[in-house]
Length: 206
Image (cartoon, rainbow, N blue to C red; front, side, top):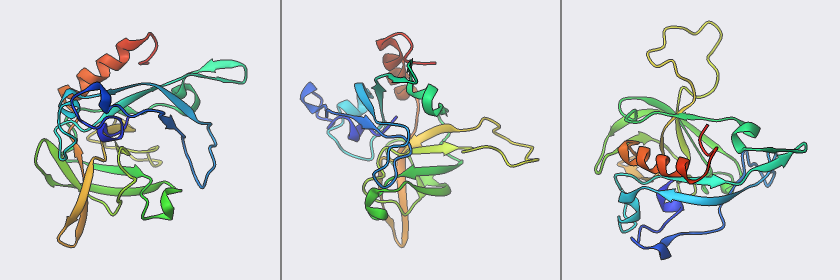
């Protein structure tokens, strides 16, 4: 999962697709500890495809199908190698999340940056703002609810599901002295896009 503007220009035509997608899980300082996975197909939402490339957009998100790889002699899906996140629709506001990305302003984009923040406010075009100091390069990074494993003895969750993606970085700016980033809300546009990606070939969705 990533931002729509990382996959297609929003031009409303097939010439808008970008190419040569690669995903490097846990990339750091040039190292690829879980290999490099090549994209084999890409999907964006209809509002992004026809949106003229403008943000905020009601559905600036995308999915990239990646090719399986042979690991220890066995063909594996990427989720079998590094695990899966789930997703939740309509959970951006109110909420608290971990925002992940590779912003150029920190470490020249060579190391993953993490922001832990609560929802700040709703914004235009079905988007929500969270406080974040990340900048260019963080686009498409996941916003994850209940990231990681629970602490020992931690109980009483209102939302017990772990590691659920609730958005991706779409845009950002400084609101006065407060830097923020925005994500489109995952809604029926996301569900429709995911259904198309799942249907492209058997086994795409666990």
